Image 1 (tube, one colour):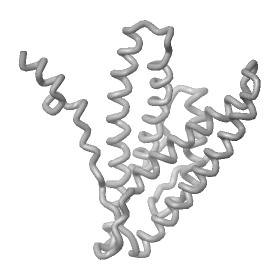
Image 2 (tube, rainbow, N blue to C red):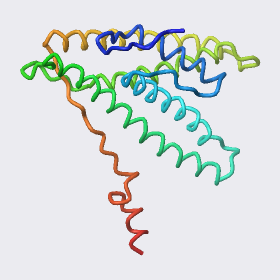
Image 3 (tube, one colour):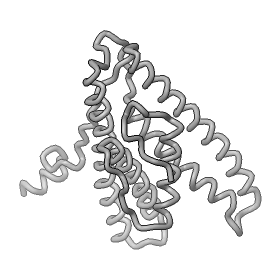
Amino acid sequence: MILPMASVRLLRGEHILQLFDEWIERWHHQPFVSETADQFDTALEGLHRANFELWHQEDKARDRRAEDAAIASAKRAIDAINQRRNDRMERCDELLLEELSLEKLPNSQAELHSETLGLMLDRLSILSLKIYHTREETGRIPSPPGHRERNLRRLAILEDQRNDLAACLDRLWQRVLRGEARFHVYRQLKMYNDPDLNPVLYDKSAT
């Protein structure tokens, strides 16, 4: 089993990918039980778990054979999980910045990076899920003609993209540690779940 990081100083793309892959495999075969204790590891696991749940709810929402009530239930679940996903993404950034602040980082004069570490971790999480399910499709029996070959091509592209992004995460993190780059927590400020900001919700409550 891949051990969690225990310190954000140890943040490495390769290790993150190993954690994501291990968690995906486990969650497909065992009930979810969190084994993390460190705050950052817990936030990272929570982010990945939200994407895992979103993946499967999205499948349910696109089932053309499902009853309308089942589709509506899946859509509502997607909204709630997506809010949790955004909260965990922001929490990852908050915890990274808290630990960096102990070393007077990030450097306030450094170049501002438009994408945060949390956003990159979210993208790596989604790519990891795509890779797992695309790999499943390469071994699907029976399958349409050319299905395996098509998905092998897709798998190679996804793995290249994930490796590139993991390398970009490593480079950004090292630049932050050297005082050459900085990032902020960029709040998603979702409106659709807030009964005071979504007009469909507050118009109904007013009546």
